[in-house]
Image (cartoon, rainbow, N blue to C red; front, side):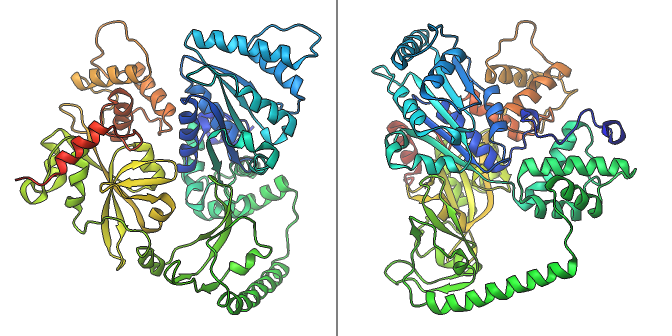
Length: 580
């Protein structure tokens, strides 16, 4: 109805899980990376959980766009089945013929096993994806575990991916399902967007729909939208869609606070609360929290500090404001200004999530022993070593100037560890030292929950984040004669190399004369590649696009997530050895 009025080619805010509209926040990128990594493994169970509307199904649809050619998918969206019906549905998805009426689990299991063995013999890999998996009965989950027993001497024949709401994680912790839980090889809990990401989310969807007017949702409206939705994408879509309809009916070219509030009431079915009454409610609540906090300051100071507990405390608000005195044998004294009770996505244990203060940054070094450099160039010594290049700052000068002599460029990114993982290159990360001053640490490897520094020190990513300034620099290999982003309209050997690299990364074969001109067809190919990597599909091959291409086409180049072989470690050690 309002598409032509705002210049949209289609409605930008729908609740359909369209992968074209997937906004890749750092958590969405990491969730997709976990699932892609798990899919490339040798079997087991993968679990993706998240609150209603956070984008689990949309991530799954994006995942299906990137499935390798040798992978066969069985996708189920109705898990309200018995064990017998589940097996029959798997047969239907994999086009396995079975006798009817069905009355034997063994017959169906044998047919599935026979089919998977044939697939394996042809070099094919099979993945079963079940959405809304929190609705699976325990008996059905046990049947899924039995399916993971189908294997050869080398690998499992079937991988299983479960998508579900947070209750799924609780179900998998049950004692009767402990054998299934032990077979989970990858898991991730997807959280809503944070306050700073909502504006980018809106701009992303509006741009895809054909209208990137930044004034359509003014900053004050965006802030209020976050308050209403708490960053849940589905709620954002519902309210934003209704707000656009309201603006259209009022003949307004932008969303006002009044229009947004009305849209929220229509979507959520809430009535407006009198401001005076709301103020009374808020004041009463604030007084209650302050009273509880004062009581808890007296109580907590006499109670030993517990960093992690298996069960959620009966009174979470007791952690709202407190000065905690931990035993000296455990941790240095830490001042806490705010904390929440959250579930660790890797262990499902309940932990205290603390918002760090400047004092906490200083005290963190008391138990995180990072090998820090006060001079940034010194931190690059190990980065160059991963490229088999000897670098000494006093001898070779500034690191980024020295890099250009070896066809390398420095690329600085203001981003968190998830973005560092996405670029997948050894990095020099800016952190706080014990005095709160900027220092530098070299990150040479990342796993799911830890990072390795150039000195082989392994630290928790959560601990590292306490000191991180979210500012890092990587080295990347530039193509010959590269001077800047390659754009539509450019011509020459660099365009030819870009076309060849993109085809190689996408496992495509170009038949015809070399492509020397950046034309429309190449732009669309680059945009397709960018979308597959969760990048902004602008069709411009800048550093980030080249880095992602390099990761797929030059797998011998150093990365963060590739395990180092003994020979490679020896080569790095030799490069770092003092020069005589």
